[in-house]
Length: 398
Image 1 (tube, rainbow, N blue to C red):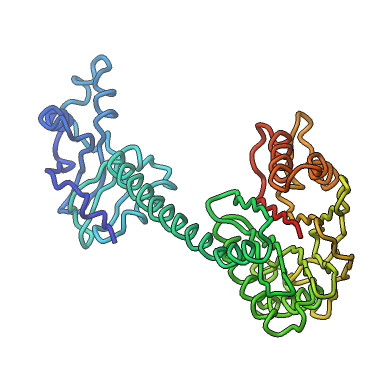
Image 2 (spheres, rainbow, N blue to C red):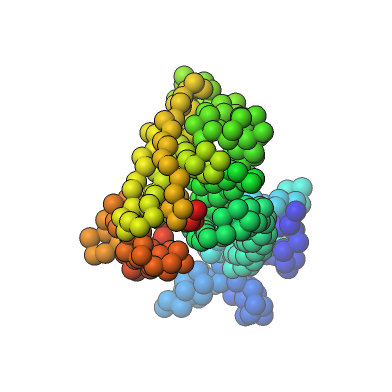
């Protein structure tokens, strides 16, 4: 802990018996000192600042009127006193809220109530600024490392996409260095399961939620037979609500404000080659399908409840959609960072309809061209508007 005593400058002090002329002489002889403590029997009783004294004695006749009077006439009788063992952060917080302009003038440092030294306001502010820069650097380094971990966490899904869905493209772009979006892929010879999750929050809180929800997804896959998308969402919902303690909402407003109410939106797709079908279940996130030989994309709607939230009961069920599997069929899963992005001069949301139109703009081309054209139209819409959310798009062809 950085203590204010480490910053204190131990210099001479005057007493109330000293005159204003002697105080002026002190400042003349100590050009680097801007504050002068006044003590009485080793106890600080006031503080004179250079600018106050010089401004006063720059007026006519002040030397004649006050030169030989006690310097206590022009001292601050209630300076901010701090103990040498106080932390610099505590002193800074007290000084910042002090009405006596302590951050401008400075403080008197004491040891067991006796005068020990002084510390100027600019010195305190500089040290506080340096401490804030160091804390920010440490936080930034931590977030950068968290970004590496989050990206590494996607490695297995990237490998499975490459193995089971070689015709695929992924756009994953957190709003910050880390974020609350996550994509997932597992498969075997007959089935491929693909999911996109949009967890509560951005940045570090969002990234933490992706760890929780992805772990619940993995555990649910181990429990639920046939990777049924609807059953998986229900299982994740129960697990997340239990893990986050969100099964019962507290009654008092104070407790409610402290209660967690977090979860995720999701779209889950099962490609079952053995049965020749595609199954989909979504929580607030739809899936878009383009059949072979068609330029338009069909939006399969999602269920309305989110997953894991306090107001989503344990027995919530999400509807499942099923459609025949066709060779050359394309599927797109996206988070609402794409749908909700505002753009153009009217600053309105992109929306699912425009997103579906952008998917169809290059459906006749190869998958990569289709993917790039979709993102190009999204970025054109965004224009100079800032990003509002994490954004993910997973597109593949079966």
